[in-house]
Amino acid sequence: MSLRLLLLVLWSVAPGVMSLAADNCIELTDLPPFVLADARPYIQLRDGRLAAGERAYKVRGINYYPARTPWRRFLLESTLPDLRWEMQLIRAAGFNSLRIFLWNGALFPCHDAPERPSPAAFERLDQMMRLAAELDFRLIVTLNDMPDLTMNPLYTNPSSVQEQTRIIVSRYAEAPAILAWDLRNEGDIDYGSRNIFQRRFPRVQVLAWLRETAELLRSIDKNHLLTAGWLNEAHSTAPAVDFVSFHHWSSAEDLQRRIRALRLSTAKPILLGELGYSTFDGLSPEAQAQALSSGISASEKADLLGWMIWTAFDFPRTATCYPSPCESPDNSEHHFGIWDSDYRPKPALDAIGDFLEQ
Image (cartoon, rainbow, N blue to C red; front, side, top):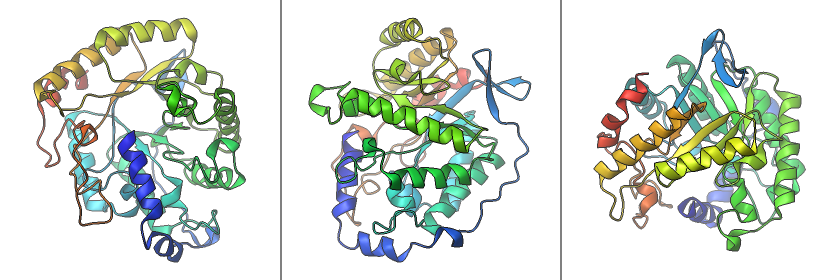
């Protein structure tokens, strides 16, 4: 997404960010262990369907960043009261799953010692895991969101990223709150699946990295499923993942066509990992509600593993801008929420209410 890419660049060049981050690094051995009392069974696949113990599990989820601390600010500035308030609001609406996003640059901000973690960032992630368990959420945790694709490119599989991945996954390998690890968000864009001008790496290199990363995770974590949320070529991830995830932004009719094509391309179970419509530049809140309802209905009729809306909340322009105080230019990225930035529900929440009660 263009705004997220812009923000990554701004963060990387902002005065003071590098020195501040370096001051907050510690040795890995000094990071307090993660402890979570969660007796729930791990989510598994049985006969092509998700299950929690003996019970079937259907994903009715939402992609989540805190409204006032999105993108990298999630791991740098979010507070426990805000996380609790927002997650309680989402849970009370009936959602059972959240998809969250990890930036290694926030978790490991020391560029001269990339294996040294930030205790504050990991404490925020620990809090997310504990809240998810407390509120009976399951998490799809997206790794490698907004990675370095220039100086130390992700798809060369640098040892520093492998070690960071090992640290993250090992820390939470026994957390039942995690439904699955998502290895990379829309990695197919990097080989031009959306637009040939966005092709920065060969397709074969990206998919080789995906397989290698999946092998690494399976060597560390025997409890959790693997997926990769691709935009247009989700079938290409099938050899590496336990279930296929795809993202959709157009009509319900096109969604039906894409599901049929996916089923012809792979026998792996399928999750609709992002479904979203922005109430910006002409799309009314009522039209957003209708589009989401139609898309979810198509997903339910196709008997997928489930669906996840993009996204929970609209973002204030002050929340996506850096350094504060400032305002980002308004654009569609600020208006995908089914709640506005003041937590008022849009018509979409009522429109999908029946699906949340199933």
